[in-house]
Image 1 (tube, rainbow, N blue to C red):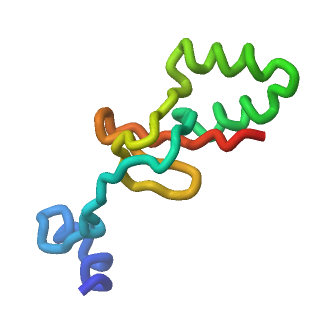
Image 2: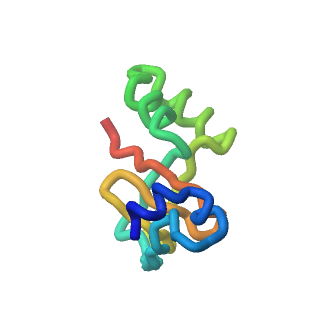
Length: 99
């Protein structure tokens, strides 16, 4: 069926063929420990590279919303080792793991 869908792309536009993967339900769970997480991997990288200026960079990132502090038990979804989604706003956050 997939090959027919790719050969007959106009049919896919009419809904005869599914072009999107099925939705996967996600489980919402509480964080095991408090974490600091940032909106992009680049922001996490900036914190890692800040060296002696870490505290200033950290304060700036927290003040302008690039990073947030999440408490233990706070509900998140789509958790991986390095990121999770805040179900309140749907934003993926990347965990700062020190350094």
